[in-house]
Image (cartoon, rainbow, N blue to C red):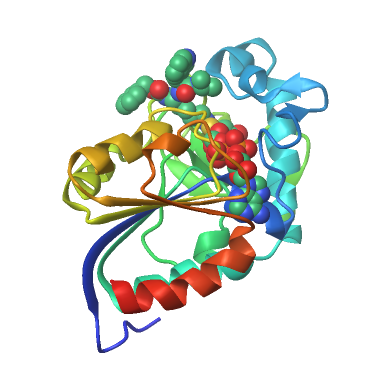
Length: 242
Ligand code: BV8
């Protein structure tokens, strides 16, 4: 997609969470009390769980990878893709592992908690897109990068693992003038602490969320409601303000 000729100059960083994909039908973590088939997400999304019961963890991710084929971006995703086209300096960071931002037209999306549509070789840590029908079955899958194929793991940042692209994220935060969070409960760090960094460097902090997150006090401006309804409207205001 082409950038619009009259580019707005404000340096904007956006962080999204599960709430932006809720209206697309993707379950959030804590709205349905964070359970999956009676397992606490925090107990399934860990390296220890993968070591102890790889079949259980694999089924958890295969179910969510399959769901990617059934969901579509919603107006909130499209609004952010449009905002990106009007800004010279725009960084989109997501905690989400779905590909809805990309499918709505966003580019250079930083998936700090990994992605569902790629899998990672346990030997080389290389990732490959594996979303064909054969890749979505119950059996484990092997990599295509090793002469002796190794098992592939979900390309996901589990609890206790280091989020992706943190240096890039901190570099964008330290220069931003506006920091917008959409659809996150502020439970998970370091994502939930990013608003503090933005605030410290004097950026304007804006929250768009269905209900009050744990870190609500850190935001200068809060819009409570559904992202799919609020973002398209806020976009009009931001296009004038930024
Ligand atoms: C790390 C992949 C070191 C899995 C995920 C004690 C205290 C503080 C921190 C810790 C602690 N013990 C351990 C930690 C660290 C831990 C952590 O934060 N634990 C929490 C549970 C306390 N963090 C880590 O382990 C991280 N790694 O710290 O490494 C480090 C630190 C800094 C630098 C280098 C190294 C790794 C965390 C990554 C875990 N993986 N995802 C998977 O997806 O399967 S996290 C998981 O939670 C998802 O990514 C999800 O995005 C994320 C956060 O949840 P939210 O996105 O906020 O979603 P949630 O459901 O919670 O909320 C949805 C919100 O949307 C709600 O507020 C709702 O109101 C709103 N909403 C709903 N509908 C709508 C809406 N809003 C708008 N419109 C709507 N329609």
